[in-house]
Image 1 (cartoon, rainbow, N blue to C red):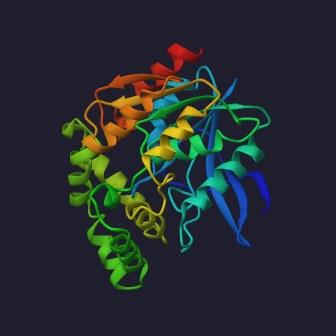
Image 2 (image 1 turned 45 degrees about the vertical axis):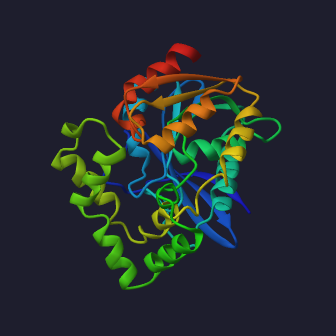
Length: 302
């Protein structure tokens, strides 16, 4: 495996307003490009967006705007999402664990603060087990570890069948198209992503829809939805990793998160080495309540 951060002129309709770069990563003999963006100056902070059908570093825009006057901010698109390459791999959690380890090791020379949302929080917790720890501090925003179908109680065999169906040519693309229509995306946002439905304007939903229309867009999201990207196997592993974190760690709990997800956040926040805060958001609180999240970081770590 080789890793090389290289500045590039990646074409994208939208950016965070910084310098867009590529991280070149070799995985299982194949070379891939992972896009990230850098803004500001000072101590580094890495922003990791949540995994979802519409995952992109752009969802961190509000946090970036609050932090960039004080820090050098890095925001990454996960492989298979955003502006990064979207190959038709059999996406598994081991891929993202290795990717995050490689990215942090190649891009940062000293420990870096990390703000990780959703499933990304679980991967940040895994990487925190390295010695020495690559993080200087951790803010875990609405941390989750179970994909949607797993939360709904679907068996492993059902989830595997769904994943294989969506990955299949023809029918798989058709199913993906149905599940990424703007109306369906808005329904999902209203269910468990955003609290204020008035923010789900036609323009906002169109931007989300465009994210889903990139070549190869269905493969990684299919793995996420069906649980293949769950960073942990169970709550015991989730809490064990939380207990072993040796650097300052805070959890941000969305008060309106779905019951099962909120219960996991509460369990993590109850650990003796973990501080926590509550905001009136749901699973997308890092975007909807970005200013609140950023102020929690600034109030505790500046």
